[in-house]
Image (cartoon, rainbow, N blue to C red; front, side):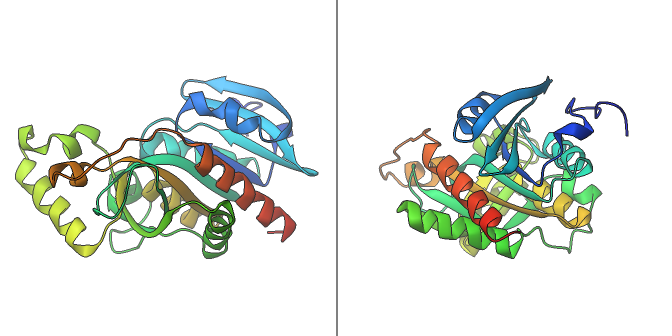
Length: 251
C-alpha cells in the first residue's frame, strides 16, 4: 500500500473498524463533533475525513460525494485501512405517498438502477445491508423516537433522469420503471446505497444506511402537501447511536 492511500489521502496510522459515510463533505465536521477528540485528518477532492472516538474506539467520518463510483472508492480504500463497519448517512426523495419530508428511511434492500454495482456483482445478486448493522440502525431509530420506514429504495445515477425523465431520449423507459417500482412498494430514491451494499458484500464487510427524506415528488404530483426538510440531525444521531451499539456488542 502507498504511504498515503490514493484517493482518500489516509495512511495506515488512520486505521479504524468503524466509518460513518455522509455524501456531502459539508456534513463531515458536524457529524464528527458528536465524537470525542475529533479532528480533520485528510482532504482530497470530494473526500474529507475526520477521526474521533466513541468511548475508546476510533471512528472515521468520511464524505463520499454524489453517486456510486465515489462511494465505492471510499469503501474500497477505507476497507484497506481495516474498516469493517460502514454506515451511510444521507438523503433521499420519497416515492410512496405515506412517506413524508422529514421521515427517516432505513433501506432493507436496493433496486440497482445504477452502474457501479454491476461492475461488482451479477444483476441477479441483491444489494442488501448487513443484518446486524441494520438491526442496530432500527433499534437506534426506535430509541430516537422519530417516524421511520424500513423497506426497499431505488439507487440511480441520474438525478435529472428521475426528476425530468420526459426530456430524456429514454424517458419512456425511465417513467415505466419508476411507476413499476412505486407499484412494487419502493419507499424512496437515492444514489449511493446499492453501490455501498454491493461493494461491502464483495469485501466481506458490513454496511447499512439511514436516510432523511427531504421531499416526495409523488405527493406533490397527487396534489398532496409536500413538506421539505433538509435537517439531517436525527439521521446523524441515529447513525452515531447505532455505531455505539455495535461497539458495545463488540461487532
